Length: 288
Length: 337
Image (cartoon, rainbow over all chains, first blue to last red; front, side):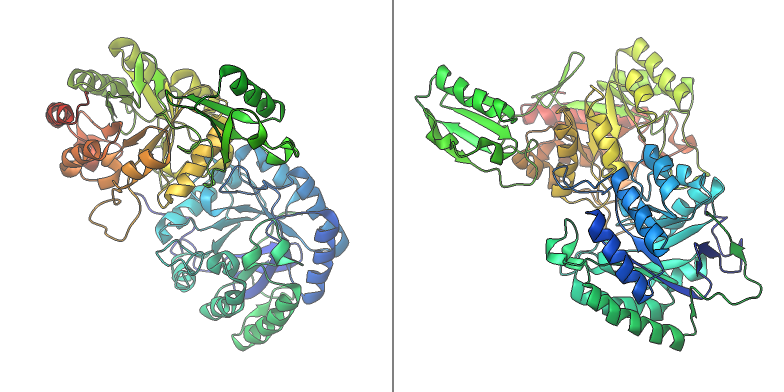
């Protein structure tokens, strides 16, 4: 089997740094993305976005097209969800990331979103990867449940081979035998990927643990391991969330965590994502 | 939920219940046994209002379906689902072997494989025209040309065709040519594709995800059934595990488990499960012993030169040998090939 080339560190020694709106990710810039699992309503989303902006979150997340294990579960608000996220961006200036689940939705999602997410279950949906490769906007590629690092990088290669190298890799836990946690966050993937690839690597401690109480410690661990960012699920009322309530932080908990992140990031020599220094950055400028 | 009618319930009473359920938007499956009638009903219970079904004449009890998969569950439909493909019945007492190369590589390669597998007793030809390759630099399949070659092979041999569809855009084209649409392992939770294939009007072969639980697998089948297509064949193809000696770990317990939980037919693909041709025949026998309704086997006229999955492909001669043994073995279990 041929190996990955474009995404390999052998092909490009310098870290890839991606600009999203007014912030940077990768190459020593640490960013925080936060928001609800799914966009559930307009007022909810906008209120939360304002709160998150106030805490220093860089990017908003929210699902409009939800990949639900059951056909009878809430499937997302669709385009209405995208419109709400765009409104939240209008109000707060926060760019947003949202998942696309099918090639035919790519056009509409790419029109609204700043970053397009390819979910775990679609990591080897090759048609979708190629379609994402034709975009200029950044793509966040989540690791498949049981994907090896090589399979993951080859999936990224599918995207890069079509012309889009604005790829952010997201470690979100792998499936193992342990059921206390929803998945097993593979912390070693973070430094391993930094060796193998020049692409930015972020962690998703929410899906990675499935338990609210474990999100903060795992976030700190991901940061310490060298991650370029984290993506966190937050909800104003987690027990009432339509999906993933168990792993969603309360806003107050995120506030505490954001303070810890700032302290840790400084101690680790990470640069705050929204204050890029001048100098020679191998920037991939994209989107709006 | 299940509405269990009493022994004495007559046609009029049964029809009243059916009418009420249908008016409230329920999807029905009627199971008229010798002893009693059972009505499987899927829908929004709140629409029944306060008129309890239990109070209707002839109703013995109403039982909820506890599993998250409803239409796929054997509680909803007690009798085995049998799927008609042309003049074949999959899921009945006859075992069906689907065989052929991993990918359609050329007209000659495909026709040679087709004639040989037909001769050995296969009833369905497999061959990929769209290949899900881990690397973007690997052979991706002949696409429409591959589908045309499969159609020609069907014309010449009478074998039906099963081939993989990878995305919603190529679905109409693949549907035109295939007799059975395969949803690959990596697409088991490609929910949009599952919803689309529900309206394709052809039977679906749903492969288990690399690390999918039984429940996730049945929920994927539920997506297709909820969309209106109940013609689903489940295919166990090995699950990802820690031992690298085999490509995957063949989970044969899935066969009796599924036969218990669901009414859908279950087949086994030992080729992908093991990744090494040498162990395919014994695992094929094991699959039949476990109760599988059929097999999916990779056969290539010249495995050493195969563009994909050579190491797990049987030569036509080895396939012939396997089929001969399998026929005798199946007879012991009172099934035919």
